[in-house]
Structures are given as C-alpha cells and as structure tokens.
Length: 185
Image (cartoon, rainbow, N blue to C red; front, side, top):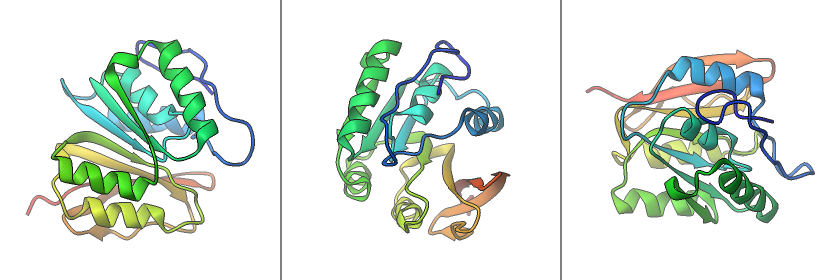
C-alpha cells in the first residue's frame, strides 16, 4: 500500500497484519481521487473506520488542510500513527480511538464541517447505513462536499439519507464506491 499522488506520492504506508483491517486498494484509491479532483482551499477530511489511514492520508497528500481519523482497532491505530509521523502530517491530523458511530455523534454536536467524509466499514455490517443516517441529520458536510462510502457490491446503501442523496456509484470488482452530497432543496 502506498500514497498514489500529491506531496507524499509514492511513499509506502504501514498496515497491520491480519484480517482485522481491509485497506482500500491502490487501484480503487487512484480511481476515487481522480473522480474527486483537487480539494478546495482549507478543505478538511474525515476518515471513519480509518484503519491505517490510506484514504485520509491520500487526501492530505492531495491538499486537504486537515484530517480527522477514527478507528477502534489498536493495531490499526498504531500503524496509522506511524504513517502520520513518517509522512510528516502530524500537525494537520487528529486521531480518535473509539466506536465510529459514537465518535461521529460527538463530531456532529461539535459543529465541525468536512469537505470529504470517507466511510469504509467492514463489508458485512450495517455501519455504512448507520453512519449515513447520522450524517443525513446535521450539516457536517460542507457545501459542495462529498461523502464517499466503500462497500461490497451486494450491499449498496440506499439512495437517500435525510438531506443526503447518492449522486454516483462505481464498481471495481467486488468493491463499490458510492458518492453522496447534500440535497440542494
């Protein structure tokens, strides 16, 4: 696993061994960030179920000003912290250990905004939909921002969640990526 593009492009990332984490493949990350394009100035990213941080670190490499990472697995968090330090992103990151739904609820109450929100939970769980349900209730997504959900092709999230609407979906083998934006109404 490596950073695909931007200021840290080509740098290798650490990942914990074992089946506890499933890093997003280089191919999917490259396609995803080609679709997203460059972030606007001062954009922030939220990486839920961050694992070793591949999505949030890629976003930092490509120009987001700050990223918040959330995961509850100790081995993944250790790899994430090492990746942040080795890439020199320590001054622009926050790492929170804990349940993603509880941490998301805390963030929703804190009034923060994010331009990109990455959701990459275990495929066989209802966690993606539960996160989208929470995110659809509060304006944590900045105007023009996107929520990006990685999921198995057999378990696509619904088209709408509160103020969120699915705008695109792409398939890469068994992996799918769905994009959500705030409804303009």
